[in-house]
Amino acid sequence: MPAQRDLQLALRVMQIRHWQHIVNEAMKKGVMGAVHTAFGHEAIAVAVSTMMQTEDQLVLTHRNIAYNLARAGALRPIYDEYKQRPSGVSRARLGSMNMANPPRGLPYTSSILGNNMPVACGLALAQQVLGKSGIVTVLTGDGAMEEGTFYESLQFSKSQKLRIIFVVENNKYAMASTPEDRRCPIAIEHICRAMDIPFLKLEGNLVADYAMQLEECRRAVLDRQGPSCIEVDLLNLNRHAGATPGWPTDPMNIDASRGLVVRESVYDPVHVLKQRLAPDVYAGIEQQVLSETWSD
Image (cartoon, rainbow, N blue to C red; front, side, top):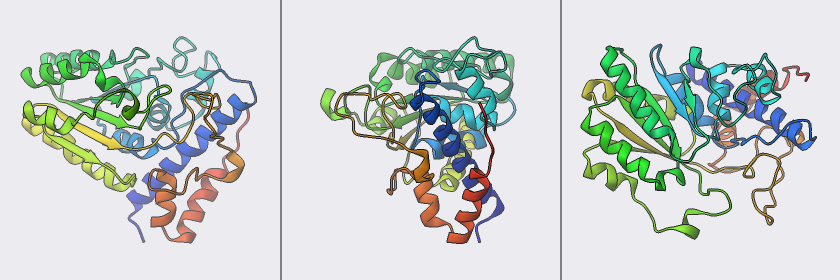
């Protein structure tokens, strides 16, 4: 029987999957504008949220739904922000691509490619100057890390001994292209080694493992008083922006009626849980998640 903590982490992953289905179905019905859903990103989002302590901060990109759901712990404030309602998490002022939740450690989200990394460095520097005990985690992807801000922010954070974790979500594509389509391979580990920045590669999408490794990384950042970089190997299981095809030949069609598992592979964190948990344990968590009532 898994530890209670592992079961709670599994519950949170499956909740975020279910909540994304609700948002995606609303988009398919035409009652909500485009949202960059993140089917396949749930394990790392839950692990980052679990790692965070009181004074920690999280800086996100345009594809932020999984992290916002993890930090909010509920769908309603996020859904209402997408619907531009005053009851939304940002009081209908920021929408989907710039959503913030300062009380839950989420001060800034950027829709500008690569913009959030220098902002995260500024927040980490402010924490240092003000004598705060937290760290800053900043999210980027295999597209945005092609920008100069990635290298510059790594260099600046190392030079200034900033307590910051760079999380690179390698989700295999940006807009309508894959990394192989547009550039040569980039070995992030080698870039980090050149600056003497610790590097960690995460793969497998098992949320309990990710949570444990991230908590160890946070402790190391505090001990060293300097940055770390994490690359997460995952796959975007949805189209570029939810129910809207990212490119004309995109065949994907995510349907809530098919259950919480989108793809039977290691790239689907819910499928990984289904394979790891005993059938009755998985079924119990799934039933708990799906029994949640919802109305617009």
